[in-house]
Structures are given as C-alpha cells and as structure tokens.
Length: 392
Image (cartoon, rainbow, N blue to C red):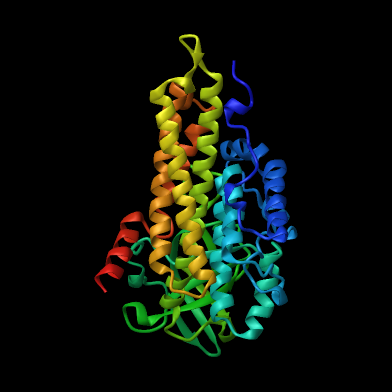
C-alpha cells in the first residue's frame, strides 16, 4: 500500500553541516554512510530480537567514530564536541540503541581522560576509542537514582587493593562490557565520601543480576551489576580518593549533551517518517499533508527538531570554548528529550491507525523517546539544575 520511504526509510544528511570544515563534513558523511548501510537496515530486527549489536560498535571504533572528541595521541580524533554530537545524531536517526551506546561509551572514557593519570589514559583510552573495549558507567543503585550522593556500594582497602561490594542498577550494556567505571563509597556519607574505580569486566565476584525488560531500546541490554568482593588494585582508582562524585557529575554534564543529540536524531527520524507517509497517504482525493491540520502539526514538529538541535550545538560550543556548560547541557537535554517525546507522539498521530502497528517505525520511536526523558538525570532533575543556577 505504501512505499518503503513512507515506512520511515532512512534519509541521509543533517542541516547542521553548516559551518564545518571539509574534513569534518567528510567525517559526518562517513558516519551517515555507516548508519545507512550497517545500522538502519537491521534496527527493527535487532529490537524485536533484543539482539545486542556488538559488531556495530566494533565497526564504529574502526571508523574512528567512538574516538572523535579525544586527543589524537591517545587514538582519538581530536574533533570538537559539536562534531561528535552531530555524529551521535546521525546514528540516532538510524537506531537509537546504537547512538545511546556511543554516548555511554563516551561517558566511560570522559572520567579517564579528565581525571586519570598519564599511565591510565595511555592504557585504557586507546582500546575504548578503537571499539576493542566496551564500557559501562555504574552510578545508580536500587536505592539511589536521582539522589546519587546517597549510594551505598562500598570499596574498602585490603592490602594494596580495593575490595568493592554492592549492587549497581540501570547499567547500560551490563554484562556485555569489557570494563566498568564504578562509583563506590570509600569514606563518609554524602558526596565527599565517593571514589571512582576502573573495574575490568572479567573480575572475580562481578556478575550480572536482573536483566531489565524494557518498553523500548531492547537491543541495548540494561541490567543490575553485582559486586561481591570484587578486588581491584590501587592503580585502578580514577582521580583522588573522595573525588568520585565530582567526577560523576562532570561526566554527566557531557553525557547529557549526548542524550540531547540522541533526542534530536530520534525526533528527526520520526519527522521524516511522518512527512513521507503524509505525502503518499491520500484521503478525499488528495495527499494528507495538504490538509492544514496535518501540515501545521508537521510544521511544529520540524520547528521543535531545529530548536533542539540549535540548543544542543550551542551548549557544545560552550564546552568546546572551555566555558562552563552544565546549565546549558541540562537545558539541551531537557528541551531536546521533551521535544523527542512530543514529535514522536505527533508522528504516530500523523500516521493515524498505521502509527499504532509495528509495520511502521513510529510506534517504536515513541516508545524509545520516553527513555530519553529519564536517563542521565530525569527532566525534573534537569529543571532543578537549571533553577539552582538561576538562584545563584
């Protein structure tokens, strides 16, 4: 009845290519090609089978996508954060689970790059950038989500090692990762008693607990990780003792920009699917897109996508310039993820009954968008961050 394009066929190109160098355009063209050839065609299949696409991350690593914002002497691409976020957006247009995975990989590399010593950076960053080592970020716990400073997972000294006991929850790629960046309590209660550690995935005493059954993003495993006497050497401590909470918050500032870019990409995919469908779908003798009710709905969707992209890239520009960007990252994550939820819901509406069936991708987009309002701090937490900055 409808063409492949009307079913949400992938379309390359991002309007945000404006202002980039020739090299940066070539990078994003490569990302777009990978997304079109290797990611988009199997997205639906992987989601239905809950199949983790490890090989995609390896391919992205070989292509240099995972390395984009990191120093060239460590195997990175030496690119501005804004270029990295444009790449994440392209991937999210093809398959959100892959884009979120790239964002989480960045979330695990950032603490090492920003707070690790030279030996740690040289040992751990190159394989992570190359996609040979996949990481997970372990902050939340069953009893501490938004209130991360109340975490109870504990690391105690034993000889020259640290021994970690506790349970982490909502761990992206939990059980699949080669390493885990773990925040554990080493001292007093509250944020000052938390330290960051690098834990190899094969460590004795480390195991996957509950594997969550989620509304969407099923190709991205989310699990509890159990630390039962996991021993790591002193040299696996990241940063100073008691500095872990500050490290975690700095990482989340950058991670929120990744989720904002994911939101823009997902909303773009939903918009493209809705435009394609309403151009082809005919009622009362003419295309549905010609009716003002639908046309205005699409206009609002397009405006939301462009506004979310602009806010995200503006926050990235502050980061690239070395300016404070925590408030702007919170704004970008808040606005872009709310926009993604609204745009995907409207895309379902534009499809009518077809939007509610699995043959069309927009029902999946709507389910996936909800996650973006929750991860890297709920949007209520983002409003708290923004309002506190205004009060200062």
